[in-house]
Length: 388
Ligand code: GLU
Image (cartoon, protein in one colour):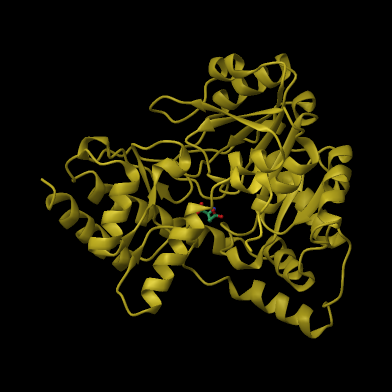
């Protein structure tokens, strides 16, 4: 007898970022020399002071259930960070600590989206957004963007219908690395007000910016926008804490109360001693964040320069995050065939653009060391020339 899963499960696809990175890791542990540019996971170890704080918390017996919304000190610190760095007028009451940024988005979708509700998602998008909307019973409305990969105010306005519940904004973007300028954010905020929308701003990459790019949170435009804004973020990318699973949702109080019901009945609190690591991350010296950002900037340049010498590939210079998103259309391959063949023939793992809503691109994460980047680019070059 086979046990039949719920229909909602057949409506979603498995996470390709997780599947391909797991495959690359498995190939590597079976002895193959794999260059993985798959998951967006910084290669750096978590900074020592953060690990020490969690170890101390463990030794001090911080091993019990904690408040579902998070450790009070951590909620205070997150609210303080959002007030002082992002001009978002939150207090600790507006914060829910979650099991990573992904979980904060999932809690939000479950708390907000009803069957029939539409959620506007600009493409290219991070692959879990539409699937979370579907799991919550809603309908993802994918809006294709132009070469800038950013939704314009006019496109957003046009996508709104009476069923629109939420607009998903992600800057810096995964998978494109593009960053919305303050005036673009301002224009989108005007549509949010005019069309009476709620916006969730996924700001997980806000610390990873290059050149003169700036991150402006949409909720900072004014109080009216803030009352319609939800912020999703976490510690994984900026502090290299991917496996810790600590993120947060910031929102008006009623929505936090609603989302906390989802969390209380599904996971309860986030791992107590991991939250002490996050406290140390916010209280401690921020030079570790800058050191990692500096390394990413170098890697971005090396990978970009190599990519743009390859026939058939074109890649703009992204302003943030740690991804390159080249167009591969001129190679004549679709993104899945390209990625499968590259992994098979050259043991280089990248993610097909189709997972992010465009079949003419691939995504490469450069959150890995320079020798791996150089070796992977040598192999990619061989792959491309083998098809000329
Ligand atoms: N967010 C990262 C990525 O896009 C990690 C994998 C995932 O959660 O999808 O690669």
